[in-house]
Image (tube, one colour):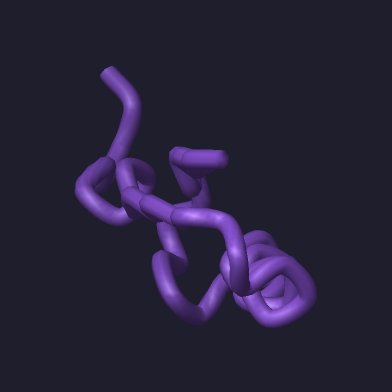
Length: 46
């Protein structure tokens, strides 16, 4: 199974969301994971 995660946290790899994703990646290594840190590129909302 392919799993794609869009991490919306502006903290990127330092976020709690990403730490949870890393844990899930360790628990389910047979899955194909794609993680995109889309929130890291957002500086402010207009």
